[in-house]
Amino acid sequence: HSYCQWNSLQSNDQSIFVDIDADDIWFQQDGATCHTANATINLLKEKFGESSISRKGPVNWPPRSCDLTPLDFFLWGYVKSLCYANKPQTINALQDNIERVIAEIQPDLCERVIENWV
Image 1 (tube, rainbow, N blue to C red):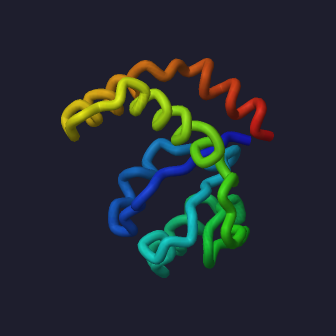
Image 2: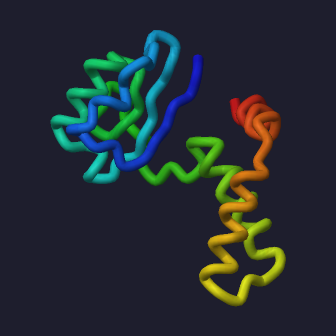
């Protein structure tokens, strides 16, 4: 199965679901209130059926789950450590570091993280 996650899904923006073949995808989002509006949950159920993990969804989001995704258990800490390595002194320097570090992430790194996650 593939893994799909994106934040702040707008329930009225159904264009993001165009061209997604959801037969082999699990959709996951946390239980934030903006993610669990009835219209959003209905849209997710329509597109992903029983293959979504969300508060109010077919598979409930585990409470206080800190390491449920590769983004949570690896990527954000990895990015943060590289962004602060040169001790940026301004917001602009920090922003430049974030953009550089994200741009330098190679697909094989993400693939290895996902392989080791499951």
